[in-house]
Image 1: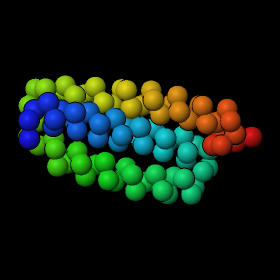
Image 2: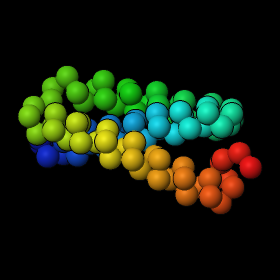
Image 3: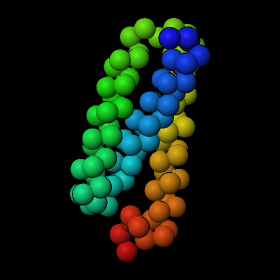
Image 4: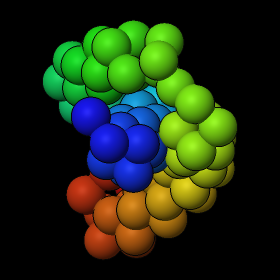
Length: 92
C-alpha cells in the first residue's frame, strides 16, 4: 500500500477511535447505556484497524497517527455538545 494511502487510513482510524473513546466517556458520564454499548463495538473495530496498520508505519504514517487523536477528541467534544444542546444526548 502506498505510504500516502496508509497514512490516510491511519489518520482516519485514529481519528475514529479517539472520537469514539471521547464519545464513550461522555456517554458513560451521562448514563447513556444503550449508546455506550453500541459505541463499544465501534471502539473495538477501529482498534483492530490500528493493530493491522500500525506495525508497518513509517515517519509519514506515524505523523498521521499522532494527528488523528487530537482532532478526534476535539471533534467528539464538539459533536456531543451540539447534540446535547438539542437534547438528544445530555441529561435534561
